[in-house]
Image (cartoon, rainbow, N blue to C red; front, side, top):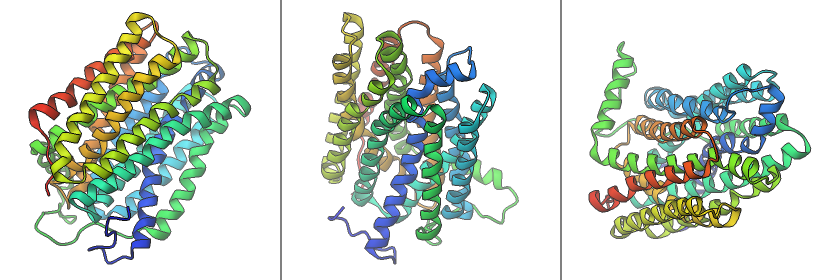
Length: 413
């Protein structure tokens, strides 16, 4: 981030802006931790609580409420401000996480995941809006690239940490870790983050004094969805993440249930594609911030996503179902995804400033909705999940490829 003038136009010192970015990283990572740290614990949760159905629905419950929560939190932050919504969201996350760690039945566990997902939604949608408030154009690519790099680390480390904790301490400790992290982040937001919602400029913000607040929110949604720039980037991101969540939901069953690997080893596996995801995001933040390279980099990233999906499906069809053949191609998918996601967020958000919360909410809801759909499909289709999530990865990859080469997405200079 040294090449970016972080303090430009904000009235805050570069050091304080860096602290805010660190908090935004933590907010986005909190949602990823809530999703991923529980993966190695799913079989133990199912056994302890006597769940007769598919325990992957615990993941789906979080994703569905996460997507719905963003549609609430983002527009509210456009009307009353970013900071109060962030603080309330963290409190909701704390309540849901505590319920989950203390749950004695599946209904309580499912309810806790729903509540936790709603709280996590504030960190993702409002956090992105704060970044959009502070930066534009190439600077925004760099910032979203850094956020994406950080978010890549958590999906790799969280299952590894979860696998170690569930083996030594049980699943309740696994669910307690995000609660502790949320408490620390709450203190950071309260002490460091200021209100970034723009109060001037040409773009119209929904009037807080209007009695038709819901109508104003719906009008904001319509405005965002009428933007062709927003839609093409949002669809590309959503499909790419849909393929990833298919892998996340199906891989525990395949590697632990079918292949017989222990949860501690499975917890290590996501670190491999996470490293590749980190590489893609790093390159995006360094190379694609130049508007002249943006389109070409997006096209290359889409090709990596498709290659990774096709290779994973080939492993399933040809019988190469062990760890390293599968993870090699999942890593290719990760490199492409690391490029697509920060570019897609930047491209989708660039037409909006005062309605950045609404735009981030719609984008996040579409992404998590695709993830929830993928995990639901994984839960419904019986048998070895490898061919299923590999097919999802291939199908989802065609979306960003078509957008990359037919729509040719660009960044405003």
